[in-house]
Length: 190
Image 1 (cartoon, rainbow, N blue to C red):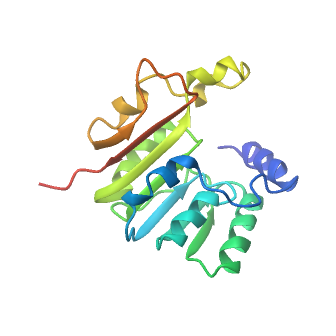
Image 2 (tube, helix red, strand yellow):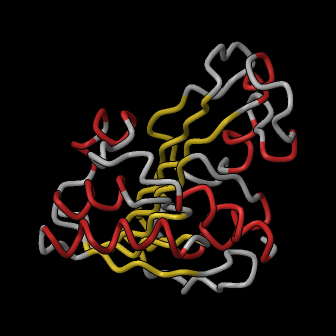
């Protein structure tokens, strides 16, 4: 991500919190039973932290990373108001190394950086849970100017995480939604 990208997101969030009620993504709520006592979580490209707050309310200690300091300020204020264990980190994910085998849960929502995926895999503990949700090529039907490099091809997440244990996905050739999701676990070491 460039400084210009970071500034663009700061400017976007400076207009106000787009999710003032911090409503979590439906995918997270629908799969809440997977979290139990989830330990340490990472919310990648967290925006204002609506998903990080949800995970923290479920007992997770959450590191919420985003390139927009403005967005993270909303997250920090909300977490402090509820005394939640959410720790915002302002960083460029192209340059920020993720620690290996550190997280019980990793969440990525509406963000695609294919080069980051090997780091995400390594950052999970064996048996750790990964929830990945982002836009796919169907998004071009309603948003023809969307940059294709940030869109998944059909079946791409299934391919990218073929070495993980699949729990749930809507990824495949027949997908009609413009959001693809993939949920699975890093295999335990032999």
